[in-house]
Length: 69
Image (cartoon, rainbow, N blue to C red; front, side, top):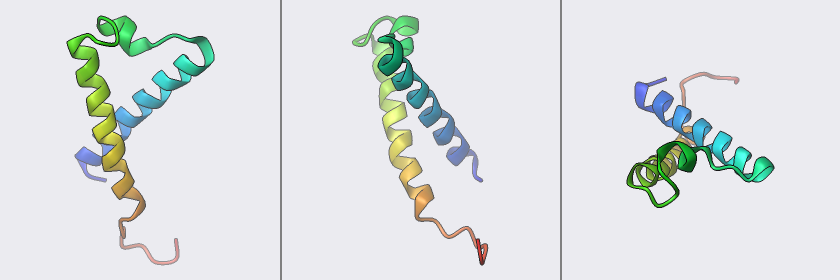
């Protein structure tokens, strides 16, 4: 797995955990840590998570060279 794939996967996991905390507890971790939902750093993180999600879609369609799996 390439480094960009791992980075994208980590960002998607961060996004999933954040959305889980919003859904279960009404608490946005990213906004809390980085200055609210409209804070510059928060918006950058939200954007990176979104781009990482798009990148991870490509993981579904890649041929990893393994037969029978």
